[in-house]
Amino acid sequence: MTVGNSKLGKNFWLAVFSLVGTTIGAGIFALPYVFSRAGFIFGFAELLLLGALMLLIQLMVGEITLRTRGKKRLLGYSQLYLNKIWHRLLTISTIFIGIGSLLAYLILAGNFISILFNLNIFSSTLLFFAIWFFSILIKARTFGKTEFYLGRLSIAFIIFITLFNLRYINIENFLALNIDNVLLPYGVILFAITGAYVIPEMEEILGHNKRQLKKAIIFGTLIPIITYLLFVVAVVGVSDSFTTPDAISGLAQALNSKFILIIGALVGLFAVFEASLSYGIYFKETLWYDLKINKWLAWILSGALPLSLFLLGAHSFIQVISVIGSVFLGFQFIMILWMHKRSKSSETKPDYEIKLPKNIYWILAALLCLGAILEVWHNLSP
Image (cartoon, rainbow, N blue to C red; front, side, top):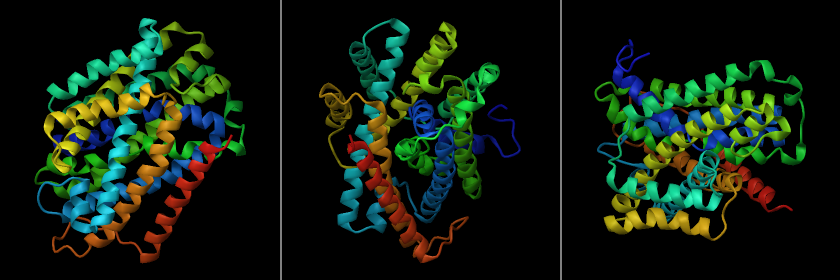
């Protein structure tokens, strides 16, 4: 498939893969680990349920986007549809999500560089940080073609790993269950399948074909979920107890394959660098445009905040994305539910509409609160 060769049009696929490329980032490498620790069946069930929730949430963001005139971002929507207190709380959560996500990218990229160049993790992370930090200063953020090719590369790599591993997969690796770790995949999955912040950009990419936004969101949400499932099957089916938080080193150890180690680390580093670059510029612009912080100070803070946490000892990739996914993204999703409900009063008629009974909003919000509480409890438990 080429960018332009499609009945749905070039811009449709650029919009789809802007969401796919934004979604598939650091989270994919953590999924096999949490699935193996909880049990594949538990992880699979959570991926299906949370995937359905994420599809609903992202369709809601799409509807809010279509109902709101002018160029807006998530914090811009909250100014229109939430009161000042909730807007400020959403702003704080957005800052924590940004810092935590960039910290996760630093940790994972440092691990991949360590594999490729045989450096210690600390030095590898600082090396990646230096390159990334100056890159977000000079590169303009663009959505569409970059994510299109990144998404295709990631999917091609997953298909390659799956086909390569088929003969080594052991079905028994999917049968073990660990009730003590049943909550472990929750926050990681939420972190991995989230790409809602790019949806306003998707509307711009589609131009006059805004009626295609709903279908683009559906495609862009489901493609990463299917890709994740293939990757988890390929890794857990082979690695089992060898599965590591970065997925690649454990898989290479289980196969005793230097080739898989190097190729996996290269593709992983490329995917993490592009995702961190896109998100780093987005976070810098959030501080600059939305919070009205000086451009240069916004750039410095974008790097200094996650780096400071790393230097203070925040090195656990799984714990970082678990907390970000369950607590801060969970809160953001609750705010999206609220904004969606209040946006119904907009005079602008969207190209599609999500209709839910009022009780469903409250039930979903309560479940997200419960998920955050249980995830924090699980992480704090000895």
